[in-house]
Length: 183
Ligand SMILES: [Zn+2]
Image (cartoon, rainbow, N blue to C red; front, side, top):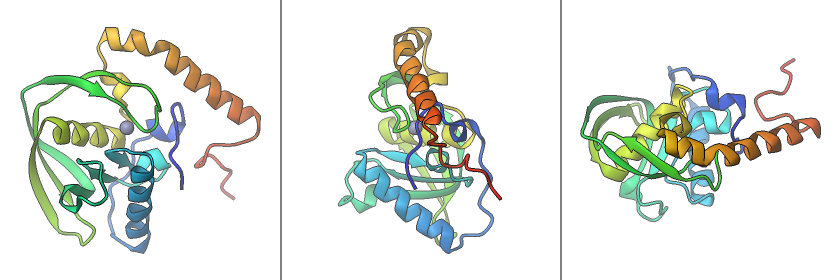
């Protein structure tokens, strides 16, 4: 399992709800947490590892030692959203790209944990931003879609570079994971 980068098609493909929390999902969540911490991320969504499941991992402190800030979210939903705030945002699938993105300041979310127990949270500011960013991933929506026109134009060069690198990798025969022929 590895983190795929823009413009990998998995990032644009909406994923399916999890119907059974089996060993595979538990193992995937564990590996995603490891990858997230190794990359100094605050959140990682299943499409970013080309996995077809509504599964997220997050740690709002970005610190594996701070367990009360660590969340695994299965089939997450935003139930309520309030206010607005613009702040710098990045994404592990767009290394090095940061731009201001406008998000709801407060969200109420519901998700299931790895035991299948539902939980609800009210989050503000950074944790609310992480939830919105990660839940967007499950629908194939990326933070570049949520940037204002200024952020979008400032990102153009980076995006062109990501596309060029991706095409180069493809030509070398390194098919992105998830696109290998399934026989
Ligand atoms: Zn992201």
